[in-house]
Length: 137
Image (cartoon, rainbow, N blue to C red; front, side, top):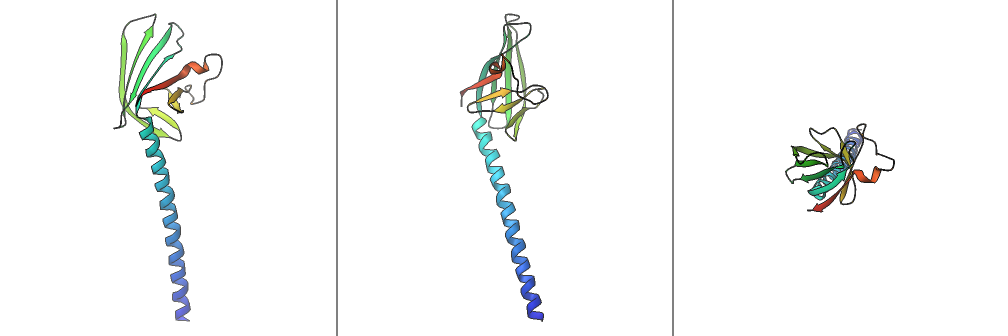
């Protein structure tokens, strides 16, 4: 009887160990994927975002390896002044977030697309103009 109990206990231990290793591998895969996306995101992006009372918001965004960003933008046709924002960035489920910014961005292939304030894709005639394209790695 004692041998049977020890055998069942051993089988239970092995089963739990296998499950734990599988969840560790899944967590590692998720981390690797997020890390891979982060590495691919590093670079400089530019675009001319729509503007209600100017010709466009000329935007230059640099995402750095250390997870910091710098964004420079100018209101074309309204002012020559360049505005600058800096902070940290991170990715969660394919969405790029810039700390200190109201908008988030959907990650595309060598581009990012600004989403509306509720985090949904912008639709309509100007939808394509909300894209910043990668110009440098």
